[in-house]
Image (cartoon, rainbow, N blue to C red; front, side):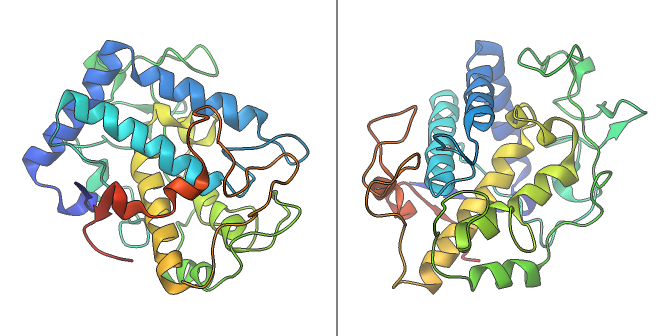
Length: 275
């Protein structure tokens, strides 16, 4: 079973294996399919429409399934690879280890924010953006440029204390844990990190930046922490509700997987430590 580790504790070999597997998926043409899927859902998921991956209760199980599918693709390249997570409550600056040249590369440079270091720099020849919002074929970042601070431990603890899981109207106006974690309410966790990284991460095509996977592993880890702290609480809604995915409803685009099948992450993987 895969063990998802903090990126800050990865060995040099684990970093190489992860990076090489990601680059292999890109070369095979498989990586861009994940970018396309995410963009399709973020564009269609609106407060007053059918919504599955975002602005809805299924935000967390949908991304758990999305991560699992990507991890499975990585493991088809190298069975030893598992997804790492980025704990942005501790690794909070552009000098943190994940932005080193041996993992994700650093901040963007110049007025365009072009990433020029690390394995995903355009000049290295391995990371041309083909699913993109404009004509720029290179990865863009603006670390801390659009919002100065990442969420703190106190911010996270305040969100982990919230119940219930979700509530009507089941969108970005909802009270509850999911919407506060997603970031439309309260201190803003998930959305704020996307904006802090900036560039590709501020678009629907955010998986173009491989930090997407490390960020969402952290979000997934926080969901598991909430579940441990509130064993009497569960996924809502349990009954079919217009435009959102209930506990037993299949989630597009997979149609064979409902949130109920994804509530226990330990069936698929574990984390190296609980939050």
